[in-house]
Length: 167
Figure 1 (cartoon, rainbow, N blue to C red):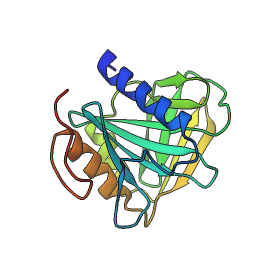
Figure 2: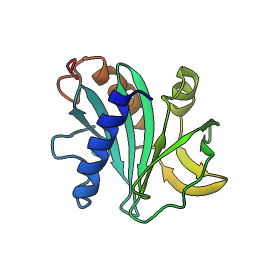
Figure 3: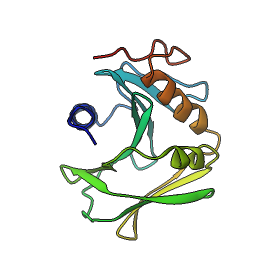
């Protein structure tokens, strides 16, 4: 992950942690299902969904490359090995940590991982084999949010409004 990506992710993390009662950042535009909000922030785009426990599941894209993050409502036990699993498959990732309540993919996820996420009905994040998130994404517009955050990060307009502009 580049310093630019990390700085933008940290800025977004601080915004989310500072306002935990919000379903998504105030500037977010929600999809037709009313679940995923996309927000343009510092030349990147973020799609977020509030989970039943108050945590936030986030997809962040810059220049078409995606990171995945979880902003938990409680402290997470750090670990060294991350895995994202869905009903369509799974992939490993190196976890990055922020303040003990946020975990994210330290590197952008591959195109194959993005393609595997698209049809998912359930997404799980595991750290050292321990589940830290198990989110139902069926009927939430997850695939559209994933494609939308990527398009937004490339400067394209869509249901989210205008895309990100180069910083």
